[in-house]
Image 1 (tube, rainbow, N blue to C red):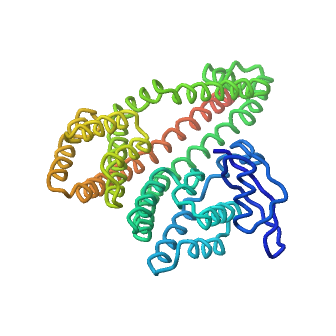
Image 2: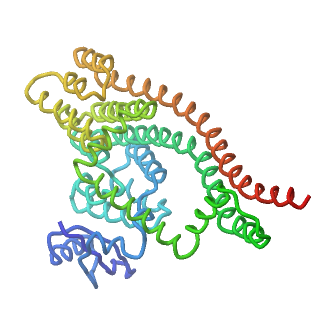
Length: 404
């Protein structure tokens, strides 16, 4: 359905602007008039128009902001405040202008009788399929406040997991970048100047010095731009290939087969599957619908295929554990736990226990990898700087020995 950007005047004579979804410009104007807003300008916008003037990643929602919104909505709704009033309160508290405009449009659409679920669907950069599905269940069952609380808890847990990974990788990444910068400066500026002075004396350069000088020439204009351009083209080509179905399947299969890293990736994929499915089932969503949602957000082609097969078995009246076990992503022990949870009628609890256990194991692996990566980077930096130092000092020492 088309999106329209509007400029209007409200009943108090104040200027208002925002976006809304309607079948046509006429329907958009009619929708605004129902809100007692007089439109002065309406223009259809596309996804590109909405992102124009800023990078896409800068327009993505802040996860912490969304978590705060969800948690506060749960508190307000559970306190007996009406949905429209709760949204109005959140609009007043919103500090980000784009998010504030989004909430205003959602509130206005709810006021006109549209469901909250339909209003949230049009803002997928804020509210993903999991969020929307759990809100829909809350609206249908009349437990919207409780489901907002479950969504907030789910998002907070997911955010903690992601922050652990980022925190573990920050120091090695900074150290590696600093090392590359130091090597670049030595190779591009310091080494050539020293070698230039040595050449003036007529001293023949050692092979290691000649080799590093050849590398140094590559780093000079215009070769550096050709190298950078080549790297960018290779990265772009790889990204294009990985965006295809075949490419994503090959990537995911390769990642799972890597030593150490593969086991960590597997733990993260299964943990994400278990926690997401547990949250959806706990919110009241049916098994078949929950599996459909989880398949869309699993982030792994092999796991997605296994979940889709599990959903087909559920619809046929069979179990879900067998296709999950056959996928090669889920271990037989975990598949057995899923079977036990399914038979006992406490699958959501069992899935949450599985997720917690896998996250604890993954945290241990991440800490070990982090403790190993740091000294490895330091050793690599020492080797690179030591090689450059030898390439510089060797001809100087030869020159000094000849002078003696």
